[in-house]
Length: 455
Ligand code: TYD
Ligand code: MG
Image (tube, rainbow, N blue to C red; front, side, top):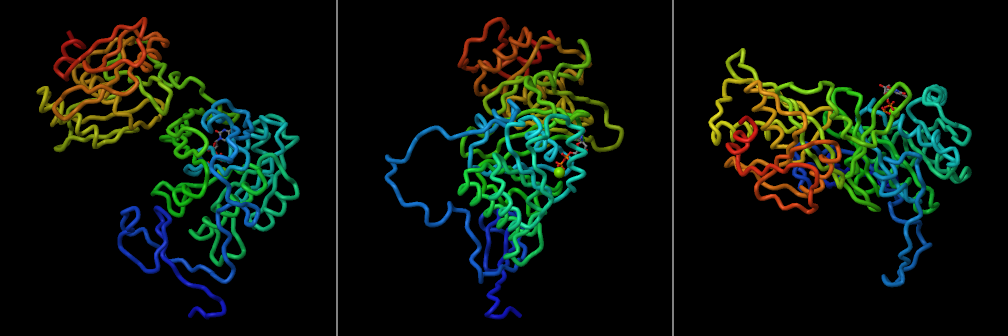
């Protein structure tokens, strides 16, 4: 029984969106997810410090008097990482880097001080021992002279030490292992995670020291994970990668100081993460030409166009029901495209297994990829290779029509730059930039695509 003196109460937290409720509910009213509410005890005696700026030091000021000077930023020694953040890390900001265990969060964050010896960095490790970090650092190479390692999980000690050391950058690995003594629950619980992040935000805002916070996302969804923190932190970077492949995509999904939907590609090598400045190199196929079942899509992620290969394999179903599987692409979307092919263009794919794969372990939600998916499926079905200098960018509608996509011109320009000679787009495409040095093939629907592709 909770006594009045202790002032503890229980609340129900949604593990998906982090909202809290006084009682249990089957469905979270805020995010609509089912069965995500978990009970947590919170101690209310000592007011948990909130995420706002340091108390007492601020007064309201007129909006027009607020200084508009550009934010002060530091470079993290990686052009790609700096670009993703909008031109370096803003001083006094809290950046969350999320991803599944083993994807490379610790590696990338340790590379920062090793690449920027001028940056005095305090690296707090709650997962690995200082010795393990040292071994990793030796493997990564670089200059470790200005990097301090602190193996600690108690937030009080960490903040005291950070005040004392006054580093240029504070890295905390990871939010799940840290705990605040004033919150009565175990490290990694919802209330601990929220409190750790809030304290770090207050520290960052108060001291002007940027903080990079690492958080794990579990495979099954994000139990007490970074999702919970998205509204607290300034920037959320998320690591993605498929099948333990070599390539990792780091996405910015929230950025108070720059654009979101930006992405950077890294390759995990024996000596750490190498930045892939030109992601189209992912696509540079191992084969010269003449393989059926592949088509190149002119993609856009964030503001940057790049090209990559879509691979399809269509074969007769061995068992009764045909299998459909997609890696890096929504399988429901694949099913929809196959249904469109069947109903609108007369291809009987009902008895065929269809496997789809995005090269390099990339994951895409760009609708412009539809046309390349259709082309790859057709190419595999007829065992007819699409010429290696051809690429595609178009969305496919339910009636088999090919719809225009955004920024077609920039995609075409990038394709031309990479040596592509032909790009298939919708007949209704409006070009923002006039593409030069590449033939634009306009197709209105799937039959028209088939006609000009396989004539
Ligand atoms: P790590 O950064 O520990 O992942 P996280 O912190 O996200 O859990 O990455 C560990 C993986 O990276 C591990 O499988 C080993 C691999 N790795 C390399 O391939 N090369 C390297 O130079 C390093 C340091 C790690
Ligand atoms: Mg780690």
